[in-house]
Image (tube, rainbow, N blue to C red; front, side):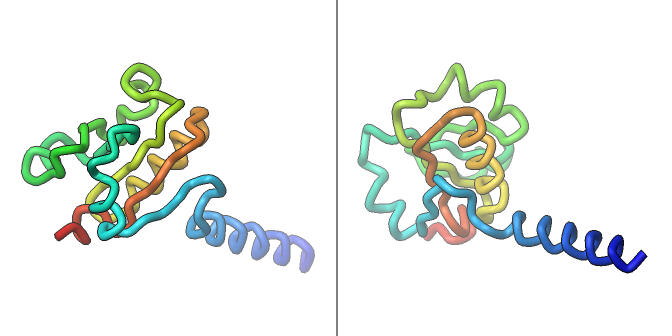
Length: 120
């Protein structure tokens, strides 16, 4: 019985740690670093917020591909040969989107920490 308790505790700790540790192969940048990259035509900029959020305020270089449609649209609208820079409102959805892109075979993925909330 004690063994099961330790196993359960280990699993809980594993899932908590996995949730907050950055995924290998995903770069995280600040909004200040993003400002220096916006003119780079070799990068693809993706905003994964909802269309309503995007319409309310967005960075002009970003195209809107909502998180719930990203997996279906990424193959058609994005190139796996170019870096993909992902943003959302706070950085949580873009982190999830970055992991989805990485799992879909995109090798150069960058997440914007703090998202639009940190953009000034």
